[in-house]
Image 1 (cartoon, rainbow, N blue to C red):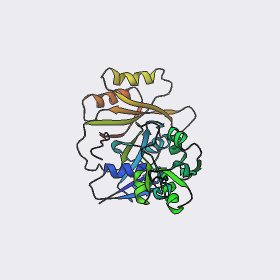
Image 2: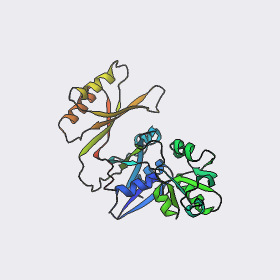
Image 3: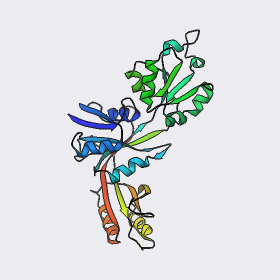
Image 4: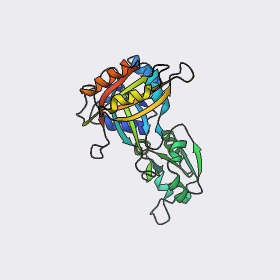
Length: 293
């Protein structure tokens, strides 16, 4: 049985995404408070693999987590998958029913407990259905659901996952209330040893490139090494090296595997320019499938 670490607490989107990816397999899922804690546990052998949310459709890159991939104890990327960030209005359904039993009676909700990001992603629904409601910010969506469970009869509701509603015995008063229904999060699986995974249709390689100093046009030449070989870059992002002011590395996602013919040659050309290249992983990618879910 493998031990899989994820960004906790239990009942969050990260927990749902981890269970979704490993469904049908006998694993132990362990929550951690910080992404740095996941890397530390993996390097110390307390977990076999870690799950890191790396990018969101609405919010973009989770820069703190990108930096953790670079600066924490080296843990190669072993897989990537996407998972929908679906938020629901959760509460005690029986106490919030309308007079005709058709509920929910949104007017009986006086306060919503959740995190600021989840509330911000549901502004349209909240403005239309609950314009009078107050907000109380808590440490996680799952914590908001737990607090609602522990305080019945007080007109409280939460924004959270279906998993959290089930865990704490509450009802989904409204399903998928986010403003953008294409809200997906990209997760990466990190660890020293590659797990046994199902076959994938697509592969990706992630690298870090540090340019040589006093080399005008170096980034252009790096990109040209991929361009003339028709290798597609799905993402390029500059991040500070944290060594000195004005020093950056480039975080690059490449569509393709290191087992291909062209990609290793492109990396050799970049290194010949005097660039430092570090490979963070070459791994399978899995899109979200509702049928697999």
